[in-house]
Image 1 (cartoon, rainbow, N blue to C red):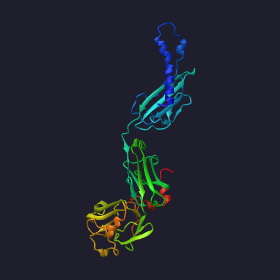
Image 2 (tube, rainbow, N blue to C red; image 1 turned 45 degrees about the vertical axis):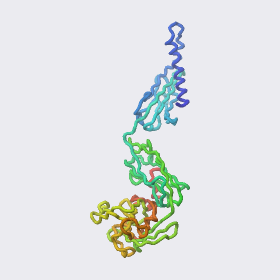
Image 3 (tube, one colour; image 1 turned 90 degrees about the horizontal axis):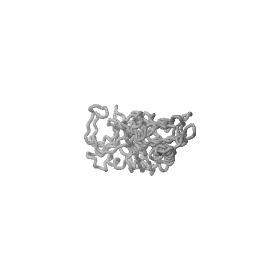
Image 4 (spheres, one colour; image 1 turned 180 degrees about the vertical axis):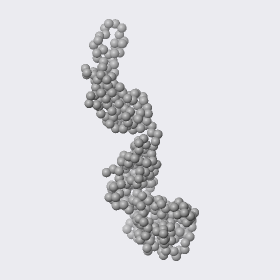
Length: 396
């Protein structure tokens, strides 16, 4: 209990002492002047002492009869005060802000009657436990190292109606410092990125301070955590679908140029900047999952590196002859590299590229007849200009 609340209790005790003395005396020594020292002000607190499941709003008040309130203090268990307002006539007080759920509060009020005699009241209560909650699923792995194109992505399990409040509960900070901005894609996803690709060596921290944050009416966050990752070396590869090559550039120097087979007629590869978001030595690829019917179902595709949520990969191909690569585009939109079955080789084109890549590496596609990749299709937000990106923030 704070010093201020203790003072109120002492005032209340002092006000009660004369009454106790009168009640304890049986002789005629008591006088009307003793009783007159008890304040006529009657303070009422809502909720009462010991209450639970108190709502966050419109559930806390202080009122007085036959007097006026002079001081009211509402604070949580850590001593943080919640501001409030006393009405002009001094008859009532209410908090200016919402209360937090699952929190213990103390409410103390001090009033005076027309003779200036003080009366005090104290109550302790706890607020409600939320029945509806939301959480954010994030993509950085704590203590991981990523490529310079990594975009922090948070997807929520419920629709967020108050995007600004939720965004204020999330921070992405870099060391050395660089401005990082948010962009919302609908009401269940928010991404964060700097204006340009990250500088190698940058340490980035994602902080989710969402516990008790109201994301939608009656829906509260539960997360309070911090995730850190480091930006590794710069690797930016360019897939030229006209030349049928993938040129791998690390730290400004060409590391290697590989022959590819990109999207064939009717299935052109997306144009634009994409980022590796997932790596699998072997994975299954079924055309039903990407809306292409029964065109293919390959149970063990080697060295698969995802570029889009919709199913664009850089991956190994062992079911076509080596002569296809560097000459003919035959895929359903992916970027194919020659490989052997099993995902164990590091000497094939696909195996080498897999071994020399990491999540967050950039793959830029040029020369394609395909559509520009959508900015929310994987970590493709780099295809928006900085002004377009910052326009998608809920906080300005």
